[in-house]
View: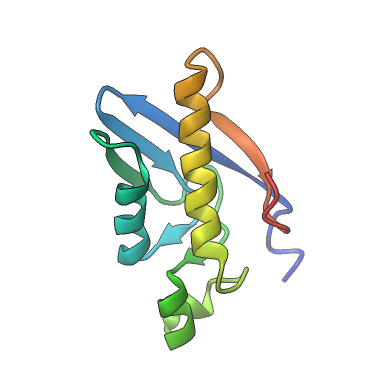
Length: 115
């Protein structure tokens, strides 16, 4: 499995007016999509974009991971992976909003969850 999954990945966030495009290197379930919409600042519409720049498997909520499903079986980084995806995406959005002249993409360590 280690040969299949990358050690690093890229997160990207682009703000277009009141829309926040959150580039995620995985496919997320509906629960995480709702959580992404709730995690952005008030007044912004979050639009998660799956398979952006990479593919690390599926990101599912902790509940979905524990229940088990096709998607959960392809969540290679474990139960906390979905929450980690959202943390990285919203952190990237925050950095791009704070410094609009900076590249809105950032590379993170996919194997440990460190940014």
